[in-house]
Length: 207
Image (tube, rainbow, N blue to C red; front, side, top):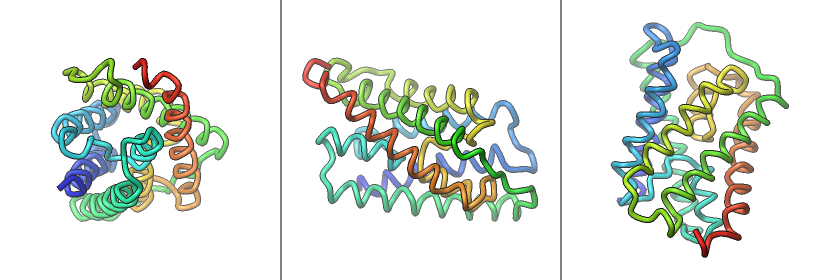
């Protein structure tokens, strides 16, 4: 059931991204609020079953912390990426085939932006949803969702604010980003997750 929950949570995250960003009737400047809120409520809904990762970078960080078996890491990644693909095509079905120009990114700037806020997202997840010191808190979902919200406003114009390989795959299918950008997202996101795990590990026993 945890793989199903990862699919559902990731699906609604990517579907929300597409529905509020793609024209017609995009949410404009309110889009990050909808996206961050969607992530938060899905984390609250599925956190007790799967951990509420909905992001291959988060799953990698939790794996490196030693709290996710390798077999689950691969299964989580598969569920998350498939959910991103399904959500993207359903968005296109609902809104029509995109006819806007595909975005090409400044590779270095996009890499830095994606790395920093994926690091921040995974760092927050580890500290509010995994650490002993914050165990049982009632705010973890909002902390995670608002990290994405802040990142979207901060660097959305630079990188598209994916912070998540499943989201990156989804926005690429939706033609919000060029296929040539995809490696930037995957590399920066997974590296950000890994670095967050490395930073968290020394204080894990005290956290």
